[in-house]
Each structure stands twice: as C-alpha cells, then as structure tokens.
Length: 154
Image (tube, rainbow, N blue to C red; front, side, top):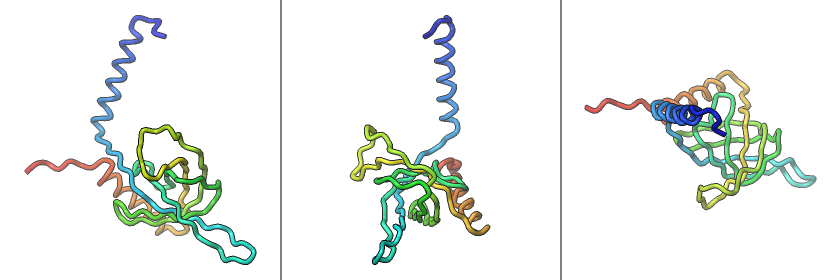
C-alpha cells in the first residue's frame, strides 16, 4: 500500500493537519429528541389518525431546506410529516420524507429506544415567513450551539 517512501509520512502529516483544523473550527455536536406526527390515510370507516414516532436529531444535520434524523421505525418516501423539537428551543415545521434507510444496528450508542432508521426530510414551506423562521432557527443553532463564540474571561 505504501509504495513510495514518503507516502506514509505524507498520510500521517495530512491526518494531523485535518485533526488540527477540526480542533480549530471548534464545532460542537449536540443531539436532541424530537417527535414526528405521521398522518395515516383514512380507512373505510375510520377517520384519519396520527401516529407519533420518537426521533433523534443531530443539530448539525439541520439546514434551511431540510434535516436528517434517526427514527425508531421506517417511513415511506413521499410521506408528509410534522416535526416538533423542544430543545434547544421550540421548533415546529412540516416536511416530506425524501429517503429512509436502515441504520447500522451495531453502533456503540446505548439507548433505551433504538433508532434503527435514518431519514432525510425536506421542509414544506408555504410562505416566505415560514422560510424566514427556519433560516432564523438554523442561524441560532449555528451561533449558539454548533459554533459558539467563546466569551473572554473577565
């Protein structure tokens, strides 16, 4: 694998450089719990029902167009959902499932509720105000939680 004499040394130096860059960026990763409301289609005699599915979201996976999340059960592509986050501040939006796939069950994370599926959600924004609220929330997450500015010691 290391045919050239300098290849291994260059790989080690590159690895150290990337690690130093990650430390310099000061990025924090936080995960929060969320609830998804999934509407099921109405049956012949019954009214449409809503199922609540627990989810886990890594704040770094939230953007102005959508988010990635971990689920306890699979969702269908194209399904419409409502997402509620209570942490770090209250956030509610509607979205559409773009993809959903099984996530590795052999993870090192120990949890009461196993999140065996990962999904990508695209936000359904109907008005400019909704888009602005999502952008505001994303900006707040970045500034206060992902890349917080360290305050000088007094």
